[in-house]
Image (cartoon, rainbow, N blue to C red):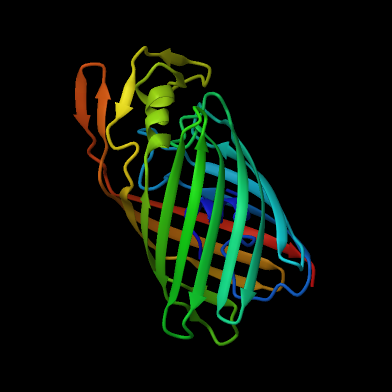
Length: 296
C-alpha cells in the first residue's frame, strides 16, 4: 500500500491518494507476468494532503486509465471532476509514468507525475506542477508489511519540497484471496513550500480564488503577502490511520478506503503584520472505487 497520491494516480486520483500513491485501484498481491490495461472510476470525499486541506471541502469523482507492461513499466492518466454543488468543474488532469518490480517479499516503484490544475482550483496542492516518487515495500510473511516512500515535489515558483513517509500494515485475506483488509499506520514528514504557495495564491494572499459559493466564476482578489515560517523545515506533518479493503472477482475490483489523518506541527502564518498559529483539525475522509482489468 502506498501513500495517497500513489493511490490516486493509479486508481485514478490520492492515490489520492492521493496520493501516488499504484496498481489499478488499491494494489493487490499478484505477479506482473503479463501486460494489461485497466480502467477505474473512483470517488474521494475530500482533497487532503499531508494532513492539510482547504477550508472548503473538495470531493472528486475521477476516472482513470492505466497501461502496465509485463516488464514493469506503466503509464496512467486521469482527470478529477469537482462535485461541489454550484462549483462543479474538471479541476485537475494528471499523467504519470513509472516502473515497478517485485522480487520475493520485496517490491518497489518509481514514478514521475505531471499535474495540470484548473486556475480556479482551491486544492491544497494546486500550486504543485510535478513530482518524482520512489517507494520500497517489504512483506514479512504473515506478520507485518513495512514501506518507505520518498518524494520530491516541484512548485510553480521554482521551490521544491521533500517528503518521506513510512508505513506499517498487516494483511488479512480470505482463503480464496478475493477479499483483503489491510489496516495500516503511516507517518508523513516533509517541508511546506507548497503550503506557503497555496496560502499566497488560493487562501489568503495576492492570488485569485473561487469563492466556493454560487457561480464558479465568482472570484475574490485579496492583495496580501503570506509567508510560513516553517516552509523550509523538515517536520512530522501527519499521522494517518488507514483501513483499505477490496474485493476482487475475475477482472473486477471493488475498493473502499476509510482514512483518519492527524495533522502535526501547524504552520506559523505571517500575513502582512498579522501572525497566525494554525490550528489544524483531525480529518476523516474516504475513497471508494471500481476497476476493471483487461488482460489475462
